[in-house]
Length: 218
Ligand code: PRP
Image: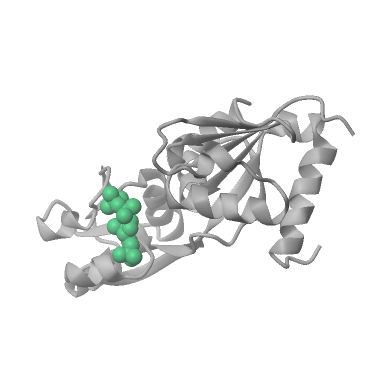
């Protein structure tokens, strides 16, 4: 069957993009030129399958998909929760598994028990706000950082942090620990809401093939 238009994928630059491409290769979707890690090119085409791929900063992936600049995107659940975009989240790709946690020095555990006003540093202010305000009913002062969030409690910018924990190595090396678990995280496939209607068969086929590879029951 002749595929009518290009289906565009937005991938999160970095390790997740390559893991996603490995997974797509298992369902016969390939793009050779994107694998050249030394290339600075941002957009790649598979003419035969009428597919396009581009690499974007993780937090921008849901933006491209919401606006229809990409039909399909792959982004971490952390990004999806923080950005809260109008997209369909269709599949847990089970890549990049980690956890969103409240972390700090062991001494900060007490501060979380008594609904005290505390300072929380995070790259994820919306997730932190939702957790403390809506789940714990604790009023907190949220301080937005853009990275190396573990510094927060060390230099006394904050009492605790809300951040991703994967191996726990960064916490250990900085004398911090997990104080509370917020939720598990992994990479998700998202789809533009209009594309889902327009290209339903093609997108459904991709989702079903991935479900088979990932051994997810229907
Ligand atoms: C992430 C996260 C933690 C670290 C957790 O940071 O914010 O700092 O990884 O991983 P670990 O539990 O395996 O040590 P990232 O590497 O994305 O850099 P950043 O500090 O600039 O956000």
